[in-house]
Image (cartoon, rainbow, N blue to C red; front, side, top):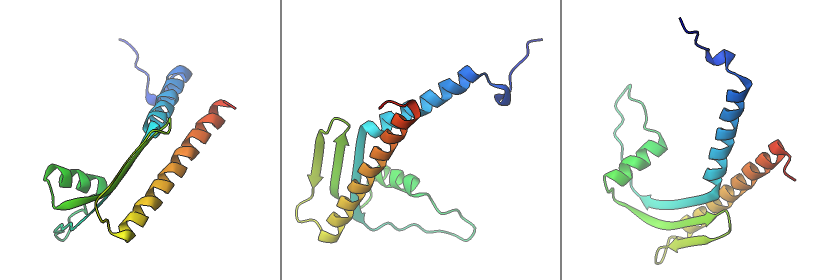
Length: 124
């Protein structure tokens, strides 16, 4: 009968492959940064004992249901610096400030990820 390896006895090569896949996924995710700011009303009825829907799941439902939300601003910045920006006509100033802050936070996160990868592989 063939012997199967448990995850705890995985070879160093498979562990390295998993690490490289994880790092590769992080780099791919960092290659195109998107920030989208929406406004509108979200109403979710939560019955006693029900789990509150996670924000990502809620956003997916909103998009699928063509909910009554409006796009305030959207920014996409590729790793090479190419940038696409959309701002709605006469946006709410506070929402636009929030969008700019979210873009700055996302840029910092991307910089930190790239720096970590450079540090892991000593790519200076």
